[in-house]
Length: 376
Ligand SMILES: [Zn+2]
Image 1: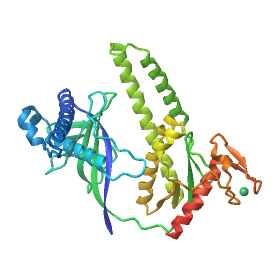
Image 2: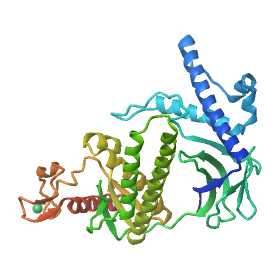
Image 3: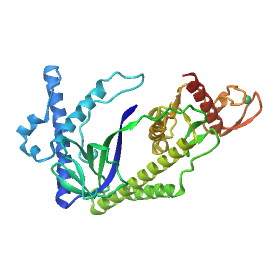
Image 4: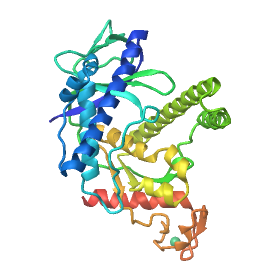
């Protein structure tokens, strides 16, 4: 059976000065429209108690300069606002508090817009060295590996990053044979670790590369410098761009690391078992804050999931209430002394074995995941 797949590929872009200015203007118009529609919706609701349905067309009459930019960018701004409303009104799980749509401030929000493929308006040219986009024309892009000719462009997100680079993220759609399901034989459990990303039930840690730590350390130093500068001064502006560049670098390094770690697991195991962690709740309650967010286990899990599915393999999620770190893997005794996170090693009061906290937890996750996978 064939299935439809989507994949995004990010290219670095090198627009001309005119193109760069138009990208800026398009992002500005999309943001303006978003904010304007939000304000009108709020005012209308206050007056009448009803929801206002709006479309960009109305605003183009009122603000003719909106017609100068890619109209898909404006349509997508409206869709984004609709999605923000839907998110606010959605049925919530216990403890969730979706926020009301917010205004987009120029200095806080990302500078980007999305455009859609219609009738060949977006295409690669010049052996893939240029990408033709609505209103912008041909934009120089850095070539990537060969894209399969059967892949079709669905949409493109154009972004001016905080460090001043331009990036285009091209979303492709293609048909592929559904991978044959692998009968799982090899299982691995992962215990989340704020230092190493994870520890496996075989006792492996992915080993966050040292050079990444160095970039993180550099980032912290440059951020300290920035905080001591006169806000708004020329040097402050330069320093801000420097911090943004290092930020991007750490983000890319982390992404790269996640891909490699995930590929390694997918190659060696048929079924990967993980805990269902509430990441946002965790960083609040355990005071791990930044480091939890930083190594992004949630992102890693999503990556792992699609890589496994691509090969007909599975990611199994073990329930949030499963006491993975408290059970002795050897005898099943439940020891609550491990609730204290500083306990890295413990001895089971029942069978007398000494456990590494993380490896023991990973083994419990593996066994519980195996049970779930085989009973399903
Ligand atoms: Zn025991």
